[in-house]
Length: 186
Image 1: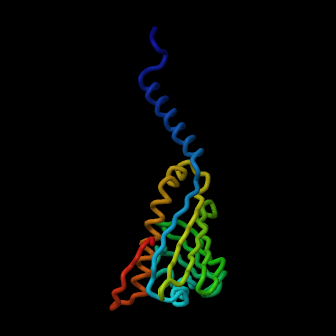
Image 2: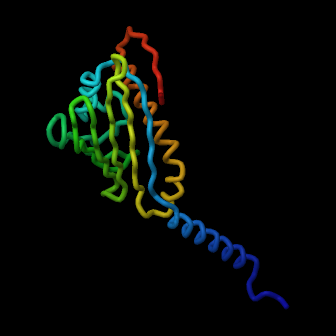
Image 3: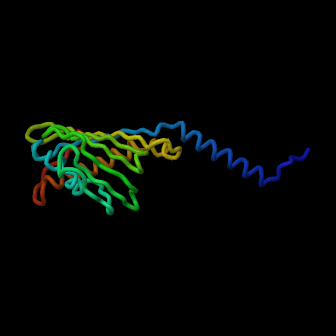
């Protein structure tokens, strides 16, 4: 007996089933992730804290939106931050929510109208005249079924980005003529 469906209907139907399955699995995947990086920096916790307490200083050592940046709140400490509207990064806001001198900075990032968010913390501790910095982030990419797949890789990808930023912070703290060894993830 011959099938009532032609080859085109069978191919399109199969593709539709695959697409629906792909999206369904994406919805079931967790959209959350966490990342961590650490380094030993050649400065006191107090000097390192000065680079972390002001959002405008973050542009020197972290990924920073290229356009539409507007500072908000005080220039440093809790409540300080910035918003952006960038063609590549979309819209969002970065806000320092806690700043304990020479000890910890906590911040939040809201993106795409609040559908995605990141909670971050930088912990500082003295270590043989230097500073041990531990940077942790966790995020939620929302209920988008495609972002569930992206979240599978975010732990590794974001940890690498944190390490790059800490390396740039190290270069900034060293200055142009210093040569101090960098000990990532120790």
